[in-house]
Length: 283
Image (cartoon, rainbow, N blue to C red; front, side, top):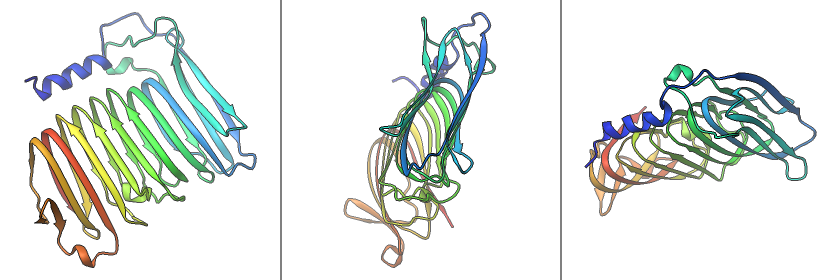
């Protein structure tokens, strides 16, 4: 069986292939002010480099500041006023692909800011990137975030200002952290990931009961749980370790101590193949 360290090393090859000539870089910026929109959707495509997503200043619907490799990528900025959808990021040109030999050569970077006062459906497709996504304070109604060979942090530092239906997360060979997911307020949260280290931090100000599912393969999964919530766990594992500290087994489920007395409840389904499941309780 291929070892997890070896697979992580192979993932690094995706990020840092063989050396090549220096990149030719260019910068550009775009923005759009609000014009009475009550809701909009944002699709972000960014193949390589560093990307930051965060709330914009009041009055701005979206903005993007981008530094990109002109021989490999072209900037993308399209807004459809009829569908109220913006597409931001990069698209490959020429023979495409990455041509970097180490982390310092991933010179592309994007800073994308989205309105904190308009309901937002977010769809982000991120490739070989280092990503920092601060969605706290936005009005997220639903979100789908996919990463490939990457190091990514998703954070809800403050409560979501809208009612969120669902949050879908997918990470490839990655180091992935999702922090303060309770502040997302999403009723359904799903994560699927491959090789890497994954942290799902379910602390925060849950406004409603929620269902969380996590499916991982050859990954270390850490789930941070708030002691203030009642938690039911269903675990399906194959060659994966699991220590149910703080739970009592009831049939096929694990139920947290004092479950019935809690005002908020989390139902969590975990499926893990060849990895570790770590539960951390947070006051």
